[in-house]
Image (cartoon, rainbow, N blue to C red; front, side):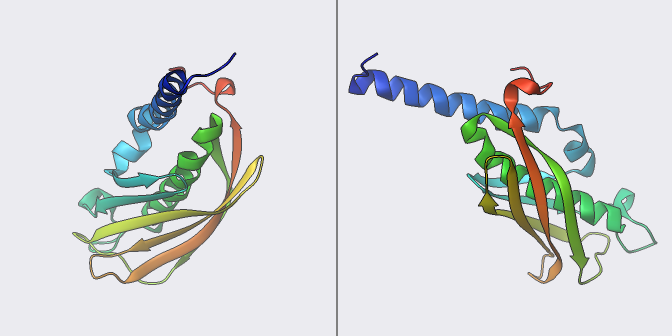
Length: 159
């Protein structure tokens, strides 16, 4: 098949729309992200940013957030960063493992910004670094994750 410039443009737009549909579908079906009240504020291939306000349901003590809440934000940030890149090959991702360092406490009413960045991608494995900052731009958690990329058609996310 020979592509004219016009046909190629239509094909390119269709591919972009399909890839965006993967990320949109994920954002619609990700009930855990909704439960955490995460807001996707920026997404580029291999890099994302999320925001969340710390609420009472996120606390482990009277004023301090639970470490599991912070690790859930981290997992969301690194996973979506990998997905934003893997979807260009029609692949989804799942977390294989991650390591997180908690550097500062997080308190009720803090506003957190999570940043995920793919630092290496292979055929099946992605290495992603993640950082979480508070409203004062202080680094409160950092880590690295490995994610497995697998074909979209092997998933349960039918478009």
